[in-house]
Length: 464
Image 1: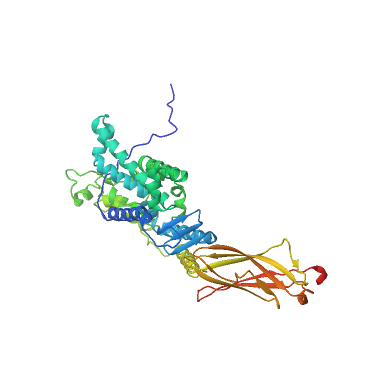
Image 2: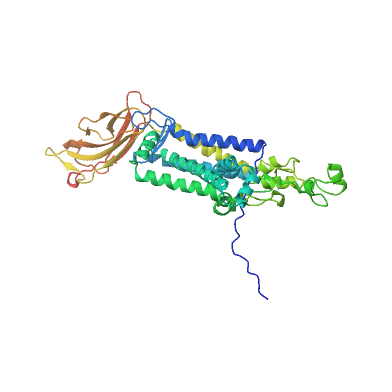
């Protein structure tokens, strides 16, 4: 007797979601339209700049500047990115603890683009029964046209998605012209084609498999759940009854008749399963594949599916304000406030001073001592700024910068200057531990706290 061999991998079951109308479907569509409008149109929004492309949002890697409307982010401001990532992580924990996987159901890029691709498929191939018949039917002219039309539109959307992403790094109109003329950088072509292929594959072909098998959030999100977390759940007590669920039929049409027969309110129409984009049956309880899109709530006309918590299902009160939730909220508010304060109070310029140690000092013919320093200035504004440089703390010292003690920096200009500090012979003895303070300050009414850099001043041992 041969033993049946079980396959190690289950063949994928193609999912054909049915369309549905309701408040959650309307919300998902509104978020999809808003997200796509921002993503696809934002690179084309113009923003006047004196020395950079007039693009509202531009990540200029060669120039080492990130432009977001009036905000200019430079390399030394990278800690802002760390702050934003931390805020997003805390926000994810905060929202997940309250409302489960709403990020996955409404805001995740995979969900949004998959939703868009399924809308295209529905528009070309028809409703769920028509798509099932088309997939199960033989390859003929009709099937070739519908499948080819679907894939063609998917490819156009994927191509525009990849090209749009590249536009955020190069001026959009210039990039499109250069791409068409074949003179764009190699990296632009590679990035566009790579994202075209991944978008087409992930949103068009893989779909729910990305959420189920590739996304790590599906695996560890349960660690953020508790008994008060709102989840999409099926009311088994009302839906099943003592005798389970049953379809509508003779003697089972009204609620009174069904209760008399011990049958629940669920008529087993399967509509909640048909509309699910990941193909699960919500009546089987909470499953890690569920992305909380809530389309099954719209599908169930008897109100058997809804947002609830495990405590509510067991007859207990749901508590949304818990120590964990309050803690996440406080940290989120503090992190956001600190980031906003840091951006609002940022200095319009930066300045650093480094001592030139080769030679460490120079002894002049008259016995005076001179130290040399390198000053680096950076104008972070989109407008010119007047800068003055002076020294303090070393009596009798003279600052010589070849007339560059006062200068004007062009918008976002970086400048490197040589500064010499000289003391007369009378001060050349006993110089051990002497310091000189460079003061870099904005002039002509420009805002900004003066930058003070204390540096050592060296003299020969024989003169001390």
